[in-house]
Image: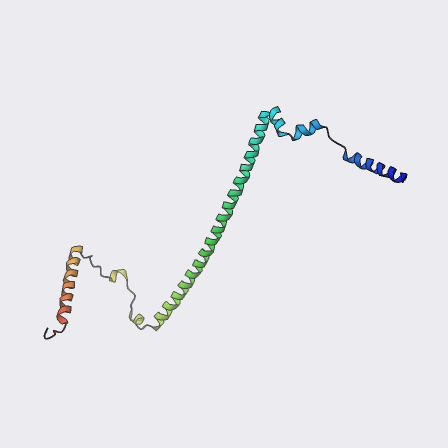
Length: 158
């Protein structure tokens, strides 16, 4: 039994020896106590607090600007995709229009009778005055209305 007591105490002393190593209290309190630092070096502590705030502000600003850049890149990509699809649809419309025009020109008899013309063969007519066109349109409207009313059959009786 004595042997057990001696071995246990030796073992506890060795374990305790490694656990009980301590740094001086003055060093730990001086490094890790911010209130003591503020009292000893108030300008340096205020400068440190200001720099911490500035760094946090810069990090927040970088995060916001990055998110804005990524969002605008997403919007640009989306718009460019729509532009590409619009260009493709426009190209398809032009192709189908040219196919239809070609088909109509092949199947129309009128195109055989058309003759190419030049600018000197054209007749240029002066533009009518607005007052004359208004009188003309009023007269034609009245005459058309009168012709329409007079063309109705007359019903006998009441």
